[in-house]
Length: 159
Image (tube, rainbow, N blue to C red; front, top):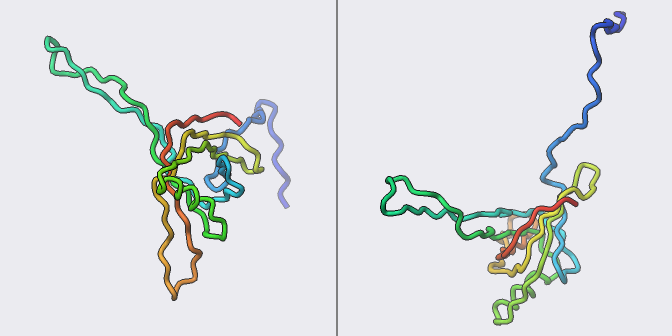
């Protein structure tokens, strides 16, 4: 059986390095104001955008200046398995009945040990769309409830 090789004196052992591994996309939680349960299968559409305005003085060359315009956020889509919990539908109903309730929320990114590491906070959200996945008597999949939220502000914060 071969003996393990001993490092030579001139060889230096690399010091322990703090690894900065990326977070996995399957460790997250969603919190919504006024919702008892907010266990979701997926969150999509987390995006902050700024419109680009092109501007040129009449006496300048044909190349325009590019300036930041309005800031906006993409709609956030939340998906979960359908249960007896009707919180999302009741919230959508407030919009349909003309008494829109705006809520704040947060998507919490968790590390491998399930500790909170980042928070994506959004404000003034309201549901512009609610849907159920297709129903099929021959299928065995879970019925999925989906809600699309209009969001006015999005902030990324350390946990």
